[in-house]
Image (tube, rainbow, N blue to C red; front, side):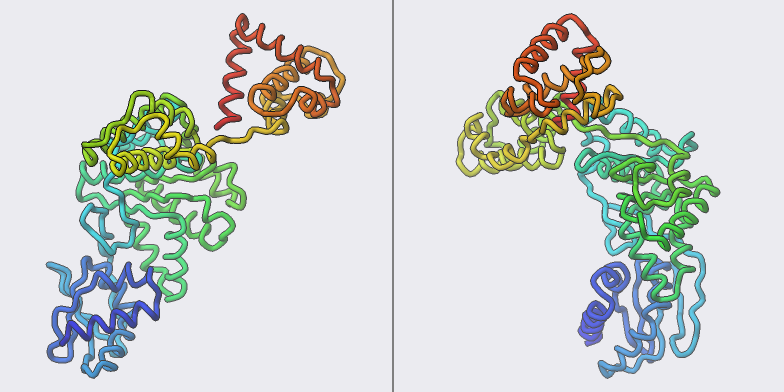
Length: 454
């Protein structure tokens, strides 16, 4: 009967306080007994027991009464810890307790759940991510490091979150007693707002400032949130002062996050900021080969024909998540049709992904990239000026416009200040000649092409 009543109470608490609060604090509790007007609840940690007692204790006692069960107080048991908290007009005593460490088997904890697939062993290293990988490895090894915080940044699907999870797993493997807290910036903000709502910022500060390693993903989401930024700033400083490691990630470098306070930008730049660059062909192929080996274990009857992985690596260049999704679809398709996955079948199966990955480069975008690269003004690029410092970049831009867009020669000429199509033909021939004898021209072309197609 007691278990049924506790289930009803949990449902009501979920409805009253929301799914996130329920998952973090209420769901982990188990009702042990309701003898002598005392409800005994088992909590995973003393910290969770304390939090529930302070923030939900009165309401839980009232809900027991509403279910016809006379309960005057709650008692929380957490293994060797047995804390009795009087709920009738008594203020619970809050003592410093250890925050739950991340573990493969623990659920309902204050931090976000880690993905067991995201380890260093499953992370494919290439030139675009080798520095980020090396820095993450160094931090995960433990001990003093010369950079704190470690700030990883880059676009969607380039491996930031994978490295964050890998660091957490590695630290836990090397030191199971380490107190590691991993969560997103949105979760940090939500927990701070909840602490304000329940007038319990002391427990919030205690939770975040008692860890050995704090990991916050997608820091850009706290930009513009003044109170959250203020608390983040003080938490950051408190942990740095204690020589505790901080690892952060964002989609941009600290200085490029609009709405982020200057003092926070400055603090974030104290340590090592590492950019995860867009994947190149070699890295994408390596990722596909690694993932294909894993899929082959799950789908031993599926055969991928030669050239298919190379084709996908070349055509799908947006990010790693899309790349992995394409591979999973190919294996599923091969399993369903019961035949070898050929290049023609892959083209048909991935038609929508291939269309979305075919980025439409515009002439305007090419002009912007080239002017930025050569540090010249847009007006000079489109002007009649024939000085080599302007003419050569203009020819480069015309060449790229011819190679990367479907625009006709007259259309390209008009976009470059109303020039004739013969000027475009001359520019294309000139750059073709130069790229074979001038290494700098060849390198610039390749760099600009990669930036435009990334």
